[in-house]
Length: 272
Length: 271
Image (cartoon, rainbow over all chains, first blue to last red):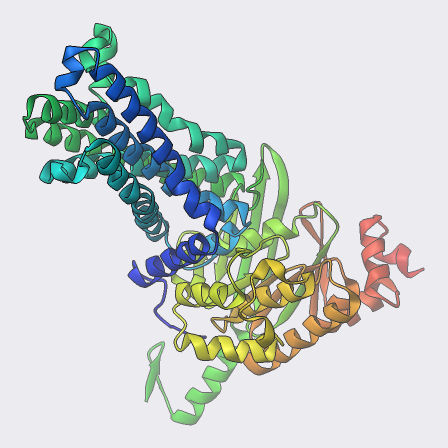
């Protein structure tokens, strides 16, 4: 027997092993890398040109240059962050490797941390070139948001991880039958978190739901910064508080779903 | 002087005691194990102990409960009732205390196809905290005739080569307990024979406890010193291959298996 104490405690070494595994996969496949870049680019270009058209005709938008591009870039952080997490998890199911992983000393917390790291890696590959293209095409410099960008990013990535963790639990419990959730669940956030319009546009009763979702605070904060040139730290703090609750709820749900998967025997059958 | 149960033992006696203890030690203890799915019993109250260093075959038709039993021993499935202990550790509750001392191989689990054999093995070696990873991979590659495939994507290999890679993964951490679920399924006879000979050699070298679920009676006869036959989630018979052959009056385990599968009693079968 090798390694007498391995597996007893949390191990960053095992997290690194899983990150290495996903990195090998990513770099072995150019369509996977291309996929990370092309859709955010298309989105950014479409909304950018639309904004140019509108701003030439409507006074408000002329003053609010960059709102749409800012919205689309932040939305992509939220959406792609969750997708990066979920796709790495799905790769294990597509490869029928989940049995090997679950039977190894890798702990669920280590597995989740590896998926979080990979979501940032995948997001960086996609978003850094797109943010540079936004400067080239529309003069919108996301990086110029500075500290505000860091606050926006931290809150959005936390939400995307929470959703990713919940979806991973659903996949463990229900197999690939729950795969569509990985691709579509975040779109529920699109109208409710008011990505492209202020919360005030929503009916009163729906605004309560919107304000219960952390990204709503980020998108409102972004509009306050771009339109009114005010950084709303209060909104970021509220978003962070809701994110902590969301992350804890998602982690608890994941553990319950994993427990249920062990009871139902679904870790053995990860197909539909 | 060692003090055991209040008695001080001299060195020679202590050595004898330790040797007896090793001989009697059970690597796997399954006690009144039950697994029900929506009221249907997949495993229905089975009990057995596997001695450390033994090789045991788990025989049974489709749906007999072999894979579920192995999954509960691995901690992948939570029993409805009963208990499983592996190397003295209760499963699945304390599985992380023992998973690094176990491993498994099954044709129903794959490794990422786009990764090379070396990449796959090195990732799992790191997960199992194997020291000197490169050296261990080279050694296993040499033992399992994988050296020329190490830098090839796993998905480009033949079924036989993939089985050898899975076996290499299962042996990476020099497991004390090795669970094998139909290790030669879908392999041609020559490759299957090759895999069996490697398993025999590995067991002789390492003294690993092996539990082998199989439909291949020849394989079980060759590798196993004990056979547990399951049917509808229960243990129908349990003994050495020689005892089972004599008990059923048959020449091969395949005939014994058919007797059990078709519900013929030992006395009937012997007539």
